[in-house]
Structure formats: structure tokens, C-alpha cells
Image 1: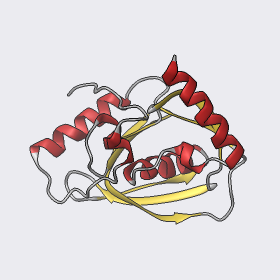
Image 2 (image 1 turned 135 degrees about the vertical axis):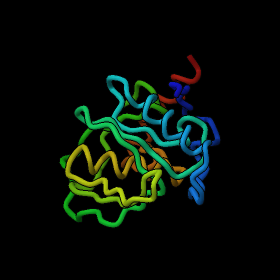
Image 3 (image 1 turned 180 degrees about the horizontal axis):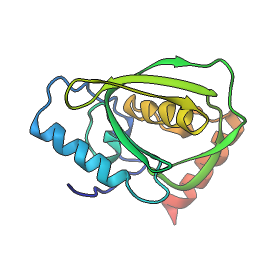
Image 4 (image 1 turned 45 degrees about the horizontal axis):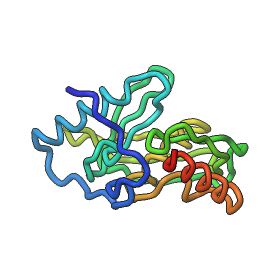
Amino acid sequence: MATREIRVVGDPVLRTPCEPITEITESVRALVEDLLETVDHDGRAGLAANQIGVSLRAFSWNIDGDIGYVLNPEIVENSAELQELGDEGCLSVPGLWFACERPLYAKAIGTDLNGNQVVVEGEDIWARLVNHEVDHLGGKLYIDRLAKEERRRAMKELRAQIDA
């Protein structure tokens, strides 16, 4: 296992939709170990495979001491009811937090390394996590979902970070 370097905005792997995992190989097992080790740090809620440079559909989570992973997750339910507008951040957009609209409840289904079904669901932080990480796997960043003015502010701050 290894803690892997986090790819940051500007890296093309973050904008490339991830491929489904079609076979459980040693490299997929190693990927899961790396996802679990890399997410297991204070302040890290979730981590998609492309954030560590691997363009496969997998993510890990670390919410209130619950650490896990899912392969090939697909969102099967998002509530129409929205959370209170809350700040969201991303390891791949370091140091920037912006108000991002997310469903109150979300449910994703995928599998584990043994082919067993994994359900990742919940309200609030869990719903935010599911949507945020599945967005990553589709090549999207949370800043893509910001309201127009908030996105403009985010891009300005991001450019200032890059120029610094």
C-alpha cells in the first residue's frame, strides 16, 4: 500500500471520464489499497481513482471513521430536496471552498473486489460525497456545478493560486 500524490486541477486525468473496471486484477487490488491508504488522513472525506492518476471507476471514503471503497459506482437515486447550501472543497482544488448545491439524499450502487454489491447512501455529507466522487469519475469537478457568480469567483481565486 502507498499514499499516493493527489492530482490537482489542470491535470488532464481529472477531466477524463473513467473507464469501468471489467476485471479484478492485482493492479485493481493495489489501486483499492492505495485509495484506502490515501483517503485515511484527517480532512479527507473522499477520493476518486483519477485523483491519484488512475482513470478507473472507483472511489474511497473516510466519513466519521467509516473508511471504505466502491468499484463502478452508479448513482441510482438523488432526492429532489436539496441540502442547505454548503461549502464544498476538493483535494484536487486545494485550499478553495465554495457553496455548492447538492441533493439532501443520494444512493450509489457498485461492487467490492469480490463482486459483492456495495451501497453508499445517506443524507447531507454522504449525499455530498456520493455526488462529488461520482462527478470525479465522470471527469467533472465540483467547481463545474457552482452557480454562475460563485464559479466566476472560484475561477478567479484558482487563477490567482496558479499565478502565485
